[in-house]
Length: 453
Ligand code: BGC
Figure 1 (cartoon, protein in one colour):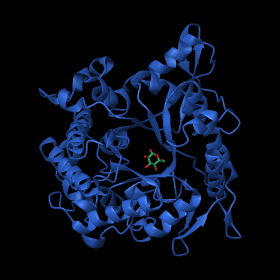
Figure 2 (cartoon, rainbow, N blue to C red):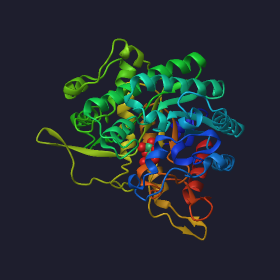
Figure 3 (tube, rainbow, N blue to C red):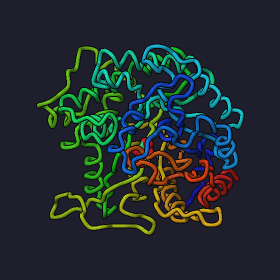
């Protein structure tokens, strides 16, 4: 695959990692932090597959300097992390200086090492005290609370941070958290309430966006999106490709609060898509006058998390999902590398924004420590394949300015606990949480070196 395009904008291209606060920080009650909704949720062993919790995670809070040194060793020039809301505003109202200090120190440490900090404000957590009052369902509480949180962080980091993503995968808050209930807060709300949760997230984004721009107009702001993309089984069939585009961008009739356009269309175009009003007509949220104007911020760049796809085919003039497996060399059922290409193509076609691949990576349950080493060849072969599809999209004109691997180190994988391992660095949970660089770590280091040549 021709990689010249990435080399072309080498100076601007971000190769990095992404992590999230709940999954990595630990120190769940240190220095004034209060319980987050995820600490509370994971404290019930019934909610987490391996009956663990988020309390210690990778102890990134205490070990961030050691970890930044590893980032440096790997040669990345960017690092995406999220802010633990309960660390910064533990009671939902008052700023905790020690919490703020941690993020200032982390940002300074990254900048000292020439690593660009890319910040997610909300990667699903919030102080449990706010969650108890209804969390994202409580419009009159949560938008102001998120505004306060935004203000505290941007005031503390202005001039140092260039990229902010207000929300990570809102679908996993609305659908997984408030509808299906396998994520915090574990609720099963009515359809109208779930759509209200999504609407309130969008209002919080709109408010937050304006605060960020007011405090530091140089910061580039985005709102993250994700999901399974439809991949044509016959790429020469134009009508099928179009059907895949439509499938990817249609609202989800069953999975309320999931879907892509119900979030990014209002932000980019100022209204929910047409099919949102049709499919959800019986349980639309209350949309007040001025709401859509507030939400309609536009974005400076797109942040997308790309992992999976499903294939579609044409049968007698109808376009249907393939049931059989159409797998490529390094694909497996979850990680379909071609998803990278079609996600980027479709997303760019619709929103015409420069794109940051803010997450992509590979799970593997077969990481074994052998003589202090982990030979996770399968992982980096898969990642290599994803990258080659990203480069194909770039070579066809899709503007991508960065690629961040999910994830830096094995961490707390939400309700799956510590079982899934997606890091390029292992965390030895039986041995003082020691960091062990996997073969994929060295592969990424050499790959980045190669890109810079
Ligand atoms: C999330 C991460 C998660 C990853 C792998 C994304 O949905 O943003 O927090 O760990 O996927 O499951």
